Amino acid sequence: RVKHSGKNNYMFFDTEMLKKLKEKVEIENVLREALKTEGFKLLYQPQIHVKTGWMIGCEALLRLKDSPISPATFIPVAEETGLIMEIGKWITKEVILQVAAWKEKGLDLKPIAINFSAKQLNDKEYLAFLEKTLKEKGVEPQYIEIEITESILLERTESTIAFLNQLKNIGVKIALDDFGTGYSSLSYLTFIPVDKIKLDKSLNDKFLEIDNMKVMNSLISLAHSLGLEVIAEGIEEEAQYVRLKTGGCDYIQGYLFSKPLTIEEIEKIYNHNFLKDVNKS
Ligand code: C2E
Ligand code: MG
Ligand code: MG
Ligand code: MG
Image 1: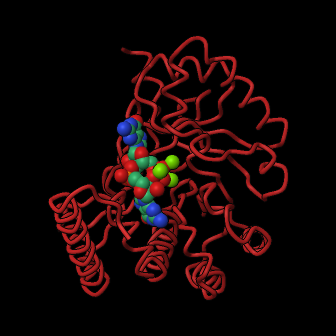
Image 2: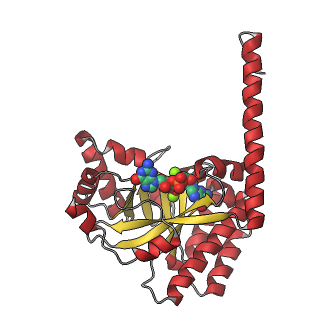
Image 3: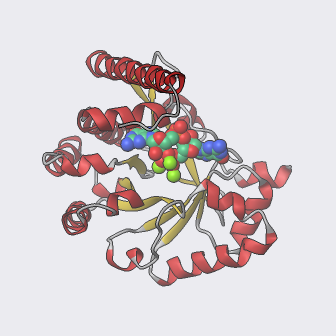
């Protein structure tokens, strides 16, 4: 039972809960409707090779076409309601179709990263769906990267690792997203089959302080010594870029170079060198 000091307090709590519940139900309805009416779209945020400035790939980020509700708000609802399974498959297919379209256009192919929810580990059909869609659309698996977060490793570790190994066997790449935000036991890195770590924005912001640079450099070296690539996300400042470059970070993703873009926008900058922008300023 809820602890409360007085009647008013209790009432307030109840009203708040009701409001939250209503919000959730509304979002759930928006998501169901979006699934029925092609109401989702993806934006793509470029990932830049630090040394050369070329775009090496991008991350697909989900949006609602007709609503400003952000994924930080609607993804948790999609997870709680189980709708994430169907949404996750829609995203996967959409991204594979996009790579296929670039192939068709004769573009030099670059991988697209997909965010994967812990809940999707319960989707028994996902692996078969991924493999089938890749084959059908004629897309090589190395052009798809799956982003998982540390929270995926919290539960059911053995079956989770088995799932990740099956993903690896299909041939897609795996990146560890939001690295440095959680329970980050570094020993994870030695037994989960990841190719890349994504240093989280909160961590990268700390690296703006000169005292923390040694930590950043050591993290990057550690990852490299384990054979992993390193991408820093949420980079907004040129000073961060300069330090990450000195520290040997492989890739950068952030507003400094580009916000998430529509497909038309990203095709325009597909072969653009981003270092020219930085060096100009
Ligand atoms: P994430 O995967 O860590 O994605 C990075 C988030 O940081 C994105 O927010 C991106 O727009 C934002 N970002 C990138 N560069 C900068 C920067 O320089 N400064 C700042 N302040 N922000 C930056 P977004 O698109 O709102 O997504 C938020 C989170 O929602 C994602 O975090 C991811 O966990 C989840 N999400 C987004 N799309 C999907 C999806 O398709 N599937 C699943 N399961 N989750 C998704
Ligand atoms: Mg991500
Ligand atoms: Mg992240
Ligand atoms: Mg995140």
